[in-house]
Image (cartoon, rainbow, N blue to C red; front, top):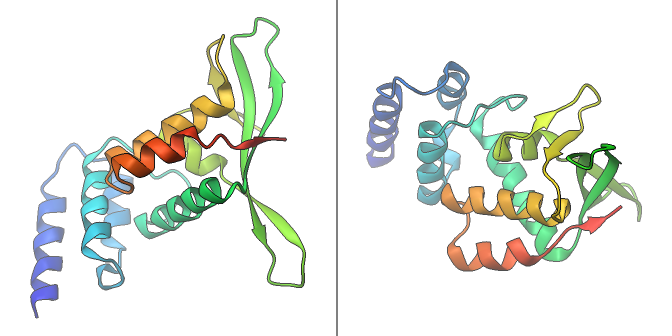
Length: 175
C-alpha cells in the first residue's frame, strides 16, 4: 500500500513541473515504478527535472539500463571510442562510442552502439551518419567524452562521487 502512495505522490510531483519537455512527461508516465529501487526513483526525478530530452529512448528505464551497461563496460575496459574523422581546422571530431558485449550465441562478441546515450547525456550533436560531433581542440576527445558522461551520471545521482572519480579516469579504448 505504501508503494502505491509513493507512486501517486511521485506522479503528482512529476506532473506539476511545467518546464519539463513533453517527451520527458510521456516517458515518465510509461514507467513501471514497481521495478525500480528508491535510488532509481530518485534518479528518475532528477532526470525528469533536468533539461535532458529523451531522443530515441522510449522511457527512463531504457536510459537507466544503458547507464548501467555503460558504467559496467567502462569499469571492465569493454568501452571503445572510434574517431572517424577530424576536421581540417582541428576544431571538431566525429566519434562513435561502442560497448563490447558477449553474444548469447557461443563465444562471439558484438558491439553495442552508445551514440544515442552519449548524445542524450552530454548534449553533443549527432550527424546524419549517427556519429557524435565533438567540437574543440587541444584535448583528448575520448577522455573528455567519458569524463562528461561520468559527471552527468554523478550529478543525476546514478553513481557516487568516488565511483565518478574512478570511472572518469578509465579512458575507453580507441578503435
